Image (cartoon, rainbow, N blue to C red):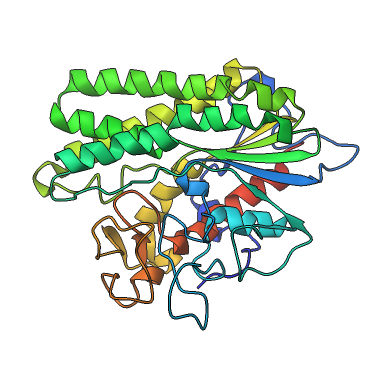
Length: 357
């Protein structure tokens, strides 16, 4: 179980040539990945925005596999030291901790501010992901933690930001999942093209909405959402597996590319924003599971209840296998397992250290 921040990029990621850190595509970020600085940016505060991919709840629970605090017999609180997510690793590497949410994470000099949105409901029926309950769940998640909801949270907390603040933000899962459900209800090329256009626009508008954050002087780690093309939700129907995987991958790509292009259109520079390509690393991990100690990249680690995050517990019979919390890529239908998130955290930290803030 991962407890401390991984120190280096995976050699496989480097060998495969994956672009872990990307300039925002054009000359507006000509200094991305290089350049000189009089003094390296050292944040006095860390503020986390986004959806549940970045969320540690007030009781320590994450939208992944959770554990009891060592020695406890009931939860909450949930353990932060066991099965941490990427933002915990990243904060720890900068000398911050989520002391308001975590009771058992190693102490750090400073407290990070957790303002990621909670979708409240992420349950999806993998036997029929467009049944009424699954559609209602996706709608709830978009309302609470979709791109527009996250922008509202950001705008309501601009007063927390200044030139010594580092912001992390990642969003997209809820909007992508809802679009995928719409596609499944009418799986044709015209529907897919319409949804791709919609998500591209949504991504662009989200990045444009970050302008007040940049204007505050805060630096921004803009972390793209992991590609869901290899997720269990994309693989739910064996009969139409290739079609559905391709559609989900296209929808994920559309939103993430919209975010990337929107940041470029907004004129953000490398001194303001660092873009982190976690969308690509999900595909690399799925294609090379043994390199990451994984034995299953298709099924969900959480078996009971279905689509269990954040209810799935490593201490109970929730798991599909006794070692699923450390050997499966996916916790549930659309959330990567915490065992993968150490690698993702490494990429975010590399982006921070390489970017010329």
